[in-house]
Length: 198
Image (tube, rainbow, N blue to C red; front, side, top):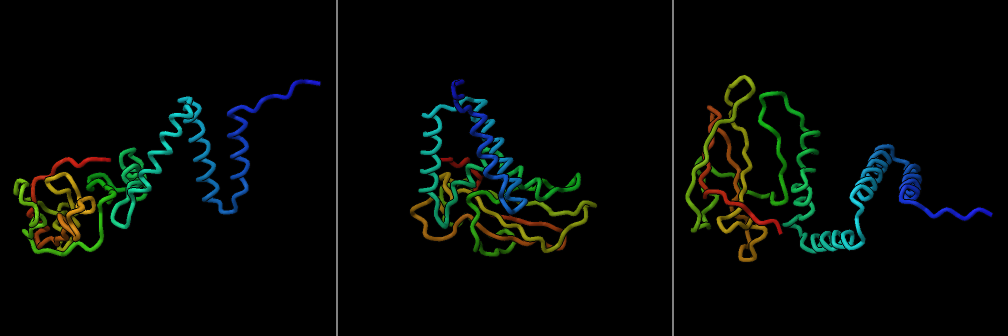
């Protein structure tokens, strides 16, 4: 009687793919089959160790603990890996010459006040370097876009966003601005700084 063959990494991948092959929703099936194929290929390519796998699980667990209604660490992971931008570019393809699309990121929050031109979003930040940000919003032919809405937010001069700052119980460093008839906008703030990624 021949010896029984041990399972290989490829056998495990094939078994998982077989399970997801029966997914009734066609789009979910496509996503899950692609995810499993690429994830298993990555694990096999780098020969991920148990210690490395467990460290990744611990990092994801800690990120989950840090998430709240004001803070979304998994979007930050997605941003740092470039996945957010790839999804955004696929979802919002632009013609040549248009401003590149970008993501909201993990620190966007709803409820920013609409401010007049030159309104100060940094009124509580007393240590930052005062800064004016101005420009124009134009269409692809160079004509001004009147009444365009700019949703602006940034980290404080401490490097923290309001959602990370335990001393703040309200929105800060956020505002919405409308362009004038010539497409102009003006924002009063402080010079942006780098912010930490925990």
